[in-house]
Structures are given as C-alpha cells and as structure tokens.
Length: 264
Length: 259
Image (cartoon, rainbow over all chains, first blue to last red; front, side, top):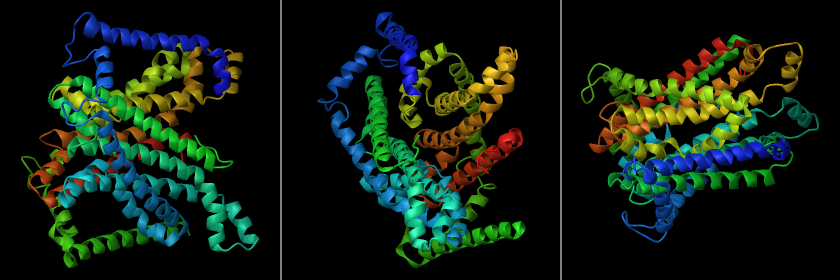
C-alpha cells in the first residue's frame, strides 16, 4: 500500500509540505511578523528553535539542561516500564491460561484498570514521598495494566484448532502453552509493549507535572510558572519526539522477533 | 448450560473481589501498612457517606457530576469535529494532504503535556480543561474515522458507482455503515483517555471534582480521602465505558465488535 502511494502521492506530498509551510508562516506572522501575540502568550517559531538549541547547554531557569531533564525522565519511565512488563506479561499469560484464576482475578483487575495511572500519584506520594520511587511505582502500575490486558487477550485468541492438534499429538499443558499459545500471542504481546510504553510515558509526564524536581514534565511546569512558553513548547516537542522514537524502537524489535505475525 | 456458565463467572468473580478485599483488610490490620493505608471498610464506608456528607463544600454526587460535565461537553465537540475531519480526510485526498501532517505532528504529544500551555491560554477555569479534553478526543477519533473510511471495500464503491449511485448515496449506504464501528471504537478509546486527562487536569489545578478529591487528600495527608477519590474515579470510569459499550451494541447492532 505504501509503495503504491509513494509513486502517485507526489502531488499530495507537495500539498502537505505547502500546508506545513503555510502553518509555520502563519505562526510566524501572528507572532514576530505582525506582533499580534506576545511571547508570553505564543512565542514565535524562531524563538522556540533558539530555545531548543540553547536549552541543551543552559540550566536556566529550572536548574538543569534539556539533556539532564530528558535523562531523568527516561530513567524513571524505563525503570517502571521494564518492571511493569516483566510482571505484566507473565501475569496476563497466567490469567488467560488458567480458567479458574481468570474468573477469580478478572473482575478485580477490571476494576483496577479503570483507575487512570495519574490517580495513583497521590497514593504513591503519600506512601513513599516525592522521588524516584513514587514515580516509578505509578509508571509500573500503568505499564503493567496495559501489558496484562494485551498478553491476556493474545493468549485468549489462540486458535482452538491449534490447541486440539497439539493435544492430538500428545503435547502436555506446558508444551501447549510454550509452543502454541505464547508464539501465537507474541504479536499481541508486542502491541502491549507498545501501548504500555505510550501509557508509561504519558503517566510519567503527569507524575512529573504533579510531583517532581527534575524531568521534562517538571521543566514545562516550571516554565509555565514564569511564562516562558518557548520552553513549554520545546518541552512538549521533546516529549512527543522521545515518545515516538521509543515506540518505533519497540516496533522494530517486534518486527524482528515476531516471525510470520502481523504487527500493525 | 449457558446460564450455569454465566453464574459460574459471577460467583467466582464475586469470590475474587471478596478475597481481594480480605487481603486488603488483613494487610492493613496485621502489618505496618495499616499506619498509612486505610482498610476497605473505612474507604467504602467513607465513599458512600460522601454522598450525604460533603467533602470540601460539595457532596460526592456533585463532585462526580462536575467532573463528568467537564469531560462530556468537550468530548461531544471533539467527537463531532473528529468525525468530520476524519471523514473529510478519508474521502478527499487533498484534505488528507493538508491535515495529516498536523495530526501526525500533534498526536504524539500526550494530552497531559498540554496542561501548562492550556493554563496559560485559557486560564485556570473550565476553558483550559475543555481545551485539553477536546485535544484528547479529537486526534484519536479523527484517526480512527479516517482508518474506517479507508477500510471501505473498493469493490463495493466501484460496483455502486457503476450502478449509478451518486455521492450522497455512496456515502450514506456504503461508507457510513463501514465507518461507524471504527468511529465507535475511537469514541470508546477517547472516552477512556478523556477520563484520565480530566482527572490529571483536576489534580493539577481545580477546586472541585474527583481529581481534586485525591490531590486535596494528598495535601492534607488524608489517605482515606485519596482512596475514596480513587474509588469514585474507578466506578465512574467503569460506568461511562459500560454505558458507551451498551450504546454501541444498541446503535450498531449489525456489527458488534469482539463478541
């Protein structure tokens, strides 16, 4: 599908490029060009670019460079995310494979998963205080929930016929799980990894807005306080780009690992 | 047999929840967790009591309704414009080329990351919350609608064109029925993220609503109130997503996803 578009999309690609250029020009026009908005309401694109470049070396006004904030955020997000995945995937598989456990745990789980990750921030801050631990725990919960849901439905979607075939050839329950169910659930598990990453990253930003002393969310919250909207926008852009890069890494790994599966 | 299976689910599910509550109760009563964590009886007791006795200046019903209103008004707008733009982009290549780059650029920004900007643009009042929820819904719904329009079977379109259908007929009888399930799945996802976003927005700045309950509890170190807030958020979230699912199965009975 992509290839076909590539050949005959040229005209539309041009329109897209034009559209973005017009957008940026209008942005420039209403800020620097005509001065309709001042920089504490809407900074000009030039200013945002300058700030983006400067913020890599400058610690003003929030006490850390962009890189330091980014690393702080990544540490928390990836820490919570990895543990969430390590716990969530086996839990989801286990829940889906064992009917009794499924029926016992599912309602509790369904209740817990309706709680947005952000809401746990208050609990964790009260329990362990503001710091690495509370944020990592919040992210752990939100990543784990997404992982459980996806690996659970991955296992549940195993074709019954495949299981029957396995049974006919004398596979044990363990064999059925490791050789039939888990491989066929892998695409879903990777979708889960992707979704969990998204929710971990979003939750991290929220947690940092609420309770933190470093990180991208902290940076934009601080900048908001002193009306440095250029930093706010730079922060948002970095958050978006980092999220997109992380998610594309997961997808790349997924494509490598999943053989014969369809990953969206 | 079916009835039995259904009952088995219910019974085991109830047992599961009961065991969960027992573990929670035991953990708070027997270990040092009890010092910081209230037991489930206190939490649920407090939750139901809050319907009569106000927390802050308002009862639980008012808190929940305020949060719901904050969420639903921009949700409706976001849904409307999302569907509109999604259909336009799906149907007209030019619209696709014009809008798609913006959607692709803005969508990776988590709605929550817009909070500082929205506060500056729209102040601390309802405006900034409406803006956030609108963003949280719009992109999701626009993209799912777009995918829906693209999933229309080319053969059907060509066949109906050959049989002399005009654009309106084509749209109403072929494109729309194919797209509606996609729209609903977008609406469903957007509802979840809108609810999460409104909670976050209320936690960052507000003076009432369910998110406020939690953050207020945190400020005064009242764990019971935090847990009451979480119960309220979970139950309301469950309620609205269930309602949405029922609505979907009623409105597009011809193609219920999943089951």
